[in-house]
Structures are given as C-alpha cells and as structure tokens.
Amino acid sequence: MNGPETITVDNLGTDNVFMVYINNYSTGSNDITDSNAVIRFYKPNGGGTQTIFMPTETPRSERYFVVACYVSATGLSVIYPVLQFTNSDPGTDFSYCAAVL
Image (cartoon, rainbow, N blue to C red):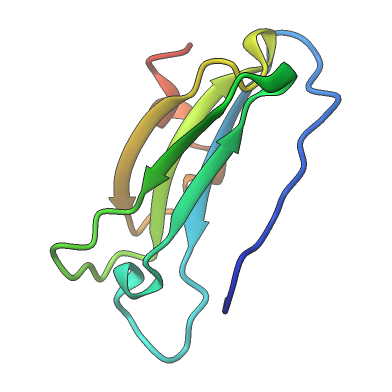
C-alpha cells in the first residue's frame, strides 16, 4: 500500500474483542518493516489519539505484524498494544489478545 489507509469502526456490539494487524501483501519486498507503518487510533468523544509505530530497527521476514487489541465495551478508549511479528495468520488466533480476554 502506498499512502494512508483509513478504517472506520462503529457498531462494536458488546463484549467483543478486536485485533488489529498488518498483512504484508507486498511483492516487492519480503521485509514488512519497509512499510514504516504508523497506526493511529482516534478515540471517541474527543479522547485524543493513540499512535503505534511498527518497530523498524531490525529487518523482519515475517508476513504479519499484530498491532493491538481492544474490547468493544471500552470502544477505542483502551487500546492494548501487542507489537508482535508472526508468519502465522493471526486472524483467528486471539491468544495475541490474552491481556483483554
């Protein structure tokens, strides 16, 4: 992806856990850190932002970067950073969100 990508989250339901992760779809580089990804969570009701930077000091060959988890009961008011690289698709592996389960 070149440039910013925006995702709007609403209708979170109740008692749901959400995980945010990055998938390296790039065909030009195997190093996921080449993206220099910056993830900003805009908190509700003027609650400010929480910014998470992908660590880039060491090249990484993993395909996925698990950014953070949050619980629908708190909306985006509380973000739990995970910051883990993995080759396994984290899409259904909520062990990354153990801190909120």
